[in-house]
Image (tube, rainbow, N blue to C red; front, side, top):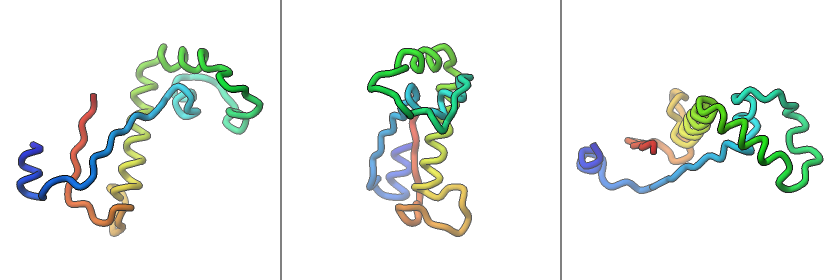
Length: 103
């Protein structure tokens, strides 16, 4: 597939690696079922506070981690490449092709 893309569109100009961190993200915590106050999520926390609780909540719900990754990647692609917005260009202008791999 990649050889076909390179043959038809030329070599890629941008290589991007995404690694969204789900353990300290409030969106992942809500998806994992934690009842949190998003207005006070980072309020009055010392460094490292609740790290274990947040990590455990996401680790116990791998579906929430997958949903979080999907949401973050889709939103980022929509913003950078303007995939869902008709007649608008993304940050990189008009994109002829992109290729994504998930590990």
